[in-house]
Image (cartoon, rainbow, N blue to C red; front, side, top):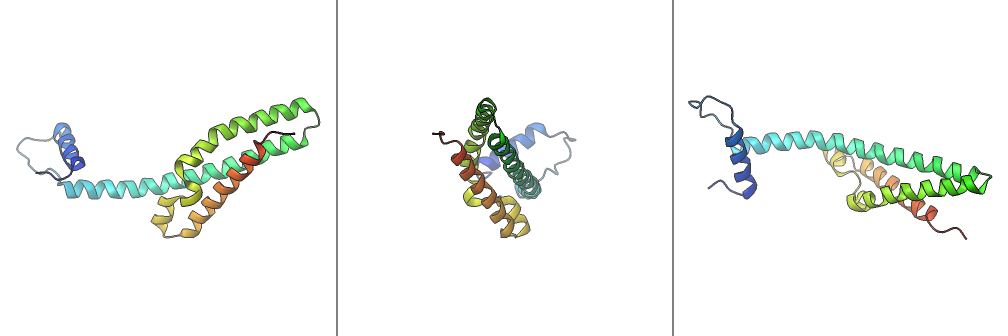
Length: 142
């Protein structure tokens, strides 16, 4: 009939939401809808990839600031606060790294759109370094 379940759902949504003259039967085909959706996702994917890469860079810089505060603190109380901040930061960031698999795949949409695997490698390296540093810093101090 319509094809896959996703195609049927798309057509039903379009039928339910169509605001047009009932005499006009020029509804877009599933192929046209898929083409438009694919083009939109390609544009969005590149933007989201840039955001993810920026987030990695900012996280890396923030971690350096935490480390600087942790190392340069002369009082143990300040060191404990810095350690708590690092631990909280790790609790937020490590699951995100695991979920996205960015350490092994990089920022895929950006690399696919530009054909530039060096950018994917850069994001992989940043994510790997970030994880290593977080895991090192989260180990108990003896």
